[in-house]
Image (cartoon, rainbow, N blue to C red; front, top):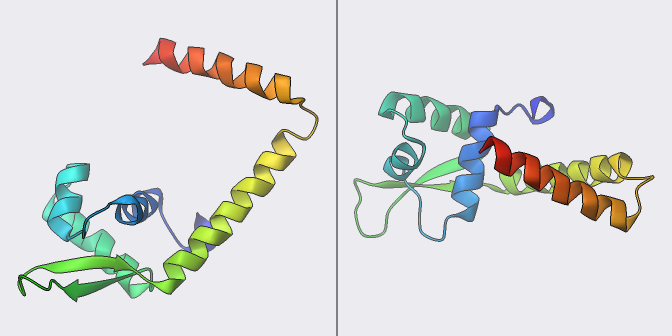
Length: 115
């Protein structure tokens, strides 16, 4: 994440905006992540200052500013996706398909046990 100048909190919010089916405003983020207004304001301000999001007035309520992703955000998403694919390829280079499936099954059991 540091390669892109992002923190884990910022990435979580970017993912939330990307995967939300409706328009997203600051209140939506506050409710979803159970964060205070000043905390979310700070995160959104930094994302906006770094060119990852824009605030735009809502069509129906001018008091509301929706938060939308920028082209820079989309490019970074693609770069991160490629990086993950490359890492996955390196991690599993000597694994057979059966070994990968077995590992997923075992990790699933571990996760269930700690949940």
